[in-house]
Image 1 (tube, rainbow, N blue to C red):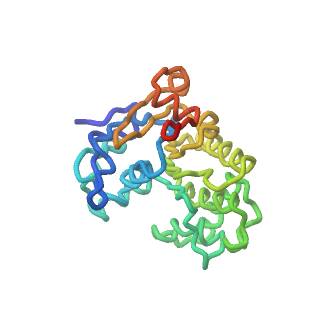
Image 2 (image 1 turned 90 degrees about the vertical axis):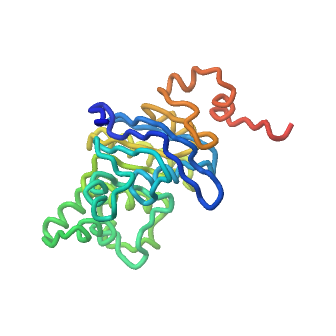
Length: 252
């Protein structure tokens, strides 16, 4: 089945277990090119597991994952390399190398892929730092950065290879509201400036309302809802209303 030119990513009946626990129970989801999709769901519900499948860090038990029309579910590490070049990922904890400066952290993907021209590396690092508003911080060690600056440095590393898609795993987790707003504005700005497709895993409705073009809700291992932000807020579905309004029914 050829991939849609409208969708950058098409997932069909994706299933995964961790130990004996079935995490993904048949996830089907389309992600249009150039849009920001926010993936909502309860903590521990499989959102990060889903992201890891899109970059080949986890292999599905069954199902299909097409990126730019190419089936990736069963590619080996060598075959995955060109696919991964299309995708940048901001991990929840930033995943910076503590022993490297900000500059070397951001340059790392370029050097890993064989770039040896230091002038090219310097120019690309400078451009990435400018995009995330971290000019002048390249000589610092990660331990000397604030939480928000660490996220921005990690984001600079994610975009330095000019991906067509950026995956964000809880980008505002652990940040105060003002710093969170900075990250949300960056996500929006990068989508516009770089013309990327963005997939943002979160349970933060403030962020969702700020950045989402489309929203999907992962519940009990399946996509319970997929639609526009207006459709999310307009639905009468009690499951969605409880999530959007932060209402628990476990304790009366």
